[in-house]
Amino acid sequence: MSVDQVIESWRADEAAVRAHLRAVDTGLHGSVTGRSGMEMFEAIFAGELPPAPIGDTLDFVPIRMTTGEAVFQGSPKRRHYNPLGTVHGGWFATLLDSAVGCAIHTTLPAGKAFTTLELKVNMVRALTDGVPLVRAEGKVIHAGRQVATAEGRIVGPDGKLYAHATTTCLIFDQPTGAEPS
Image (cartoon, rainbow, N blue to C red; front, side):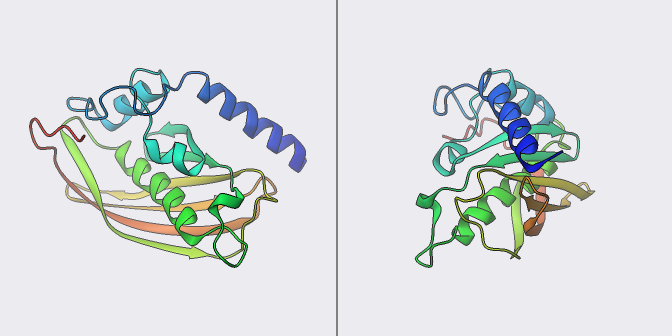
């Protein structure tokens, strides 16, 4: 596929997902109690639960979740720039944190939650708004009872690598009645 064909395909994937996503902040974000990670993502993609507001803030959207894998797509914009005229490292880190964290979340049964203990990001190429779309792909390396690890990559439609990351997450019992606000 040519770069233009990949961009067209990625835009079509995003449009298909967005057609079913609920607007952010339209409902209880804490309505995940009693759902496995995959059940929560299925509810988000079906429009039953809203996606996380951070995607709206930073122009990225979940594209696909399968057990142990998560794909997000982002649109780098000038408003994401640092003073040097390229996309800020925090944008890379947030996109990758979402991909690797959600990859882990897909493996969790109902009643379990996670938090990031460590995130290591390597930015290997500058990114500007000249690249219309990138994808962050997260994959679980190990999912244990208390600790999980995952790796992720940000790639452009031409296959270029922009950043890669690893994470370590703590797995714990979701507190009963703990509904995040």
